[in-house]
Image 1 (cartoon, rainbow, N blue to C red):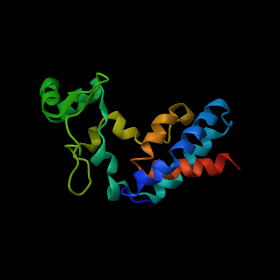
Image 2: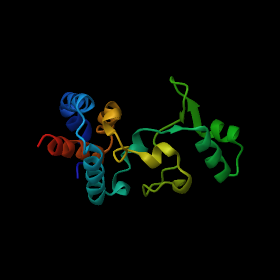
Image 3: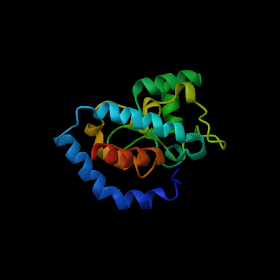
Image 4: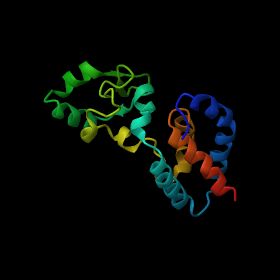
Length: 163
């Protein structure tokens, strides 16, 4: 699998091509795209061990929904306001995000300290198993800079769809 340190250069080299690919997919979506992407997602995540990487947790932070905040605060036996004050800030889009990266809940062993109650954005990352992936092309392209699995899935998607 691709090293997270090599990823920014590789993703930058493919960015223009990947943006064009997703634009094309949006205009003309193959009927079986959801099945293709689900299979590629499953195949790649058989090969990838997120615990060896954790680049997403080290370099970016998820958005925290109100239900995420309430669930995680309850887990810590804190009031939601105290959780927000301790861990979160409001970003330029008025969303709650982590105050700092790497994630405060990431252990030295790359395990998540709140895995069972982690935010929805973390549970769904890198979003490559969702239906209608062509609708989040720009997010997927951005994720190819962070996640080796997302990069690999997009590369394999281009092969699968263009044949």
